[in-house]
Length: 385
Image (cartoon, rainbow, N blue to C red; front, side, top):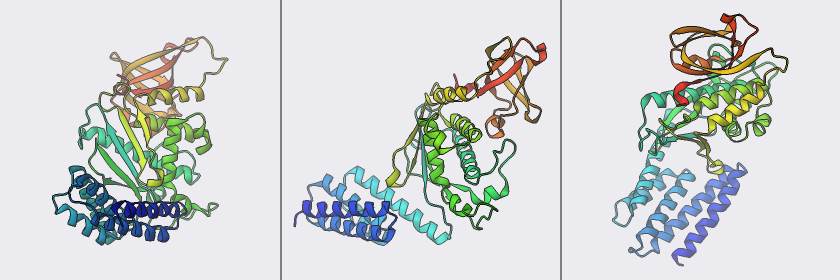
């Protein structure tokens, strides 16, 4: 039989495996992935050594299929066999080395005894100051923190908790949602996030399926990010029916997005590493404006509001008294009190303290001079210029 016949047979087995995988029949899927891999190995033996590109493609396919079938020993054998030859093109060498790295990670994880819930999120940033495999530390730490906050909020939402406006998530939430940062293959700059499986099963009175909901954290995180960026006025309403939570996810995602100028970075991609759900969610320099438009629709001014105008203030956020309904901003050296701030949440506004901000306010002429500004929106100045 020729290379083509064995390769075609491999594709048929792999296609069947994917169908079983969609149906969650993991054992049967693994068996078919193994058959597909063995067919590719035989196909390799039928290739002329001069066809280096085809050899590279087929070798990568065989090793990938063994990896998918979780037969790591066989995958390593085939990879090392072909890496020791002079027949592989550069792209195949890079891909095989990456698969070997992934196998080492899987094997180390298995030995550690640490388990993760289903799903892995791959986050990549590009453009602006981002280099291949490198990025400013402050930028990365800031985005990692924001992603963790969205994971916590997703967990609270899944567990039907009242929206938290102040403070950090409680110990119960942290015990059920423990995000880990994982090394990803070098790209523009990227990292992976997984949630560790809880060591103690959660029990909440009136919520018998709490443990099952926790297993959906990563999947729900992706659903929320996708709906927030792609259809904040439609799909997000279905994914997150509660208005307070919708507004919170909108604001958190806006802070995650690239700045409007794209100076530090211009694109963020978030996707599942599951082959079945590979479409990335893309946050671009336009995302902030899209979300701001959606937020304005939810925060329309009352028709009976007295004489007023909407203005923009720029300054340094100096203090927060959210429980007392105000924030303090230094504008051109003068301290200004901005009221109607009690609905803001710590996750969003807390990191802005002592940083330059742009604030959209309602200036009311029916109020005393020291109480004329009322908050509509606030963003970091660096994200808008």
